[in-house]
Length: 354
Image (cartoon, rainbow, N blue to C red):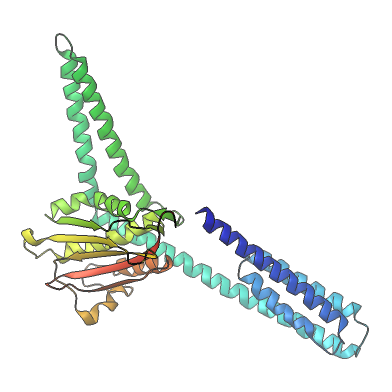
């Protein structure tokens, strides 16, 4: 993570140097050339560079500085026709103002798109949590039941004559352990539901999968679904936002559960495999024994509002594709040999010590 931040900081510094250097070059060239030559129009490039990495207010400051430099060059230039210089100065200022307006308008549109995408991701998370209500209740109910049982057992050991302090201590330790389990479930649910900014870091892919399975364990048990995982040896870390990747896995797992609704209970199985060929990417493969997917429909399942369910919103897989592609990976699906469907997606990998 530190290396990533240093690279981002270096890129920003280089842009500042390029922008300021260009401003100086244009100012000097505009000042020493004749008034008939509209060198100041090249300040447009300065504005475009600024719009690529600065906020709107800062872009306006840069644009205003370019206008001031244009006027200063006009005043300092002594050679050439004055009337032509006035026209060129006005045209250059108009180009700067127009470019600034268009650049800020485009930036606003991009920001609006990012905000809409973030809202869509959050909506998908909440939708998934609604479908996982039974699972969450089951996950929390187990440790709470353990707390009650251990508490009652502790009271009985303390009421004995003489009190069995060793057994009572063991009961208290079980209470603490079960309480921590319940707290962990609540924290995972809060992480998925709350609105947080993406936070990418180097993570263990197997840990992400295990946490996702734990979150959906109650739903899996309720539907009599067995889930198996296969993790390749020496698997690289992945650079990702763990909560968002959990969302991708949850969407795929929930779809697999629904696809196996008519599958005989003894054949209801989800297989998750983690592999890597060259260490640059880690591939997540999720396969089920459900109703399957046609080869010619595989690409369409990732389109927004595409759903095979009568009450489906059709945003889960669209959001999943958006998340994976934002991480620099890709996602695809297809039929599974022998029946069912397979979903695959990749994330950037990094081996320890490399």
